[in-house]
Length: 448
Ligand code: ADP
Ligand code: MG
Image 1 (cartoon, rainbow, N blue to C red):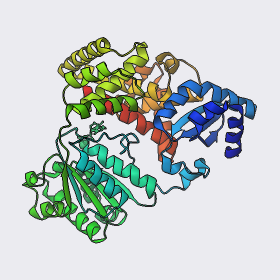
Image 2: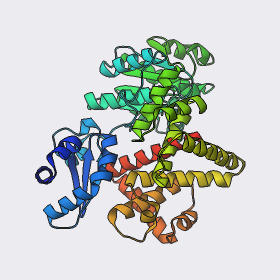
Image 3: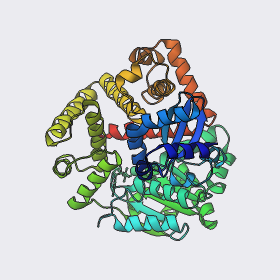
Image 4: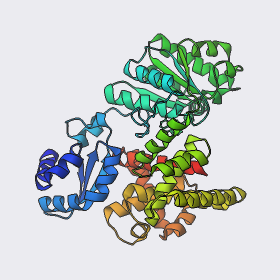
């Protein structure tokens, strides 16, 4: 069984190493010659894959007397309890939303500027319904979305039976429009009003001027509120500034707790920059952190984007990150951005490369390995995922992808179909992996 296999693996690995790195490891699945191991910590996952991947593959191959390859994947704590995890994943009720595993309360740096918002969000996660609704407002890139995901992550961990739904106001509206078109409004209402315990609505200012969606939100709000379900709303305007919103909706927003997030002071920003680097397992010294905070736009989203680009850069070139490399990289990113803005084509090139780098990061491969002709499962999967992402997020045509990855047209379209099929048949390990990759390149893009 998987547990026995894990025990055998443990017995063959140095005690200290095991205790230090593998205590959260669980064997999730064995698929042919791939063994999938879940790790309870995102940073450890990357590190262990790099440092101990071969050792674990070799040891497992020896135990199973056949050549196997190990893959590590991140499993959030709530799915990591003692039961056999492979099964558990299938048994778990499907989550309504996926939360960014990096956007947790632990990874949120608290300072004067966001203390109230942080503790209100934490309180709501621990006692849903207590402050209802919670309305968080503040300028862009000050951590509102991070806090919403933190609530989602926390509730999934502490009360996995609660149904938590995250939507942006834009998604809410699109969903409504589609349901209207397809005459499925009953479904829509049931989805938002009956099947949700906690509703997180991001960027509600999007609904300015969208009367019908506001009306729908009002009714959703009332139904959930009357059932005692928690509602959390984020906006980059205060409730009063949403002046053109229907007054009945504004008064709903003001019924509960209204808190704001402000621009952090410099000390807090330095701590945030360090935390962001730590989240990418990137070591940067204090002078680099200071340089980043002093010289890169005030916007935290750009800071995060730049840190991810630094990570890619240090990984590809092996260069250490110092103030000089940061300066060089930042000005070249800005130059590329400028060229790209003037020319649609190069914007596509930037995107394509970010997607590629994010896939390499996730699978811990070099370019050469990825583009080799090897049929190794892990590498083929990485290649297939790359083609899938280029098609769906890079908006590339199969023909373009085919010349980018150096495979023929039919190989590429089969690869894309294969991934689509895996996703629609509920391969959650793969889905999570793809979501992780997507988040990385979407965030890295924000420097541009
Ligand atoms: P908003 O939704 O307010 O526009 P986000 O939540 O998207 O902002 O934050 C932008 C980036 O900055 C994210 O990567 C987020 O993790 C990071 N961030 C913002 N505030 C903090 C904080 N206090 N601690 C750690 N990271 C933060
Ligand atoms: Mg946001």
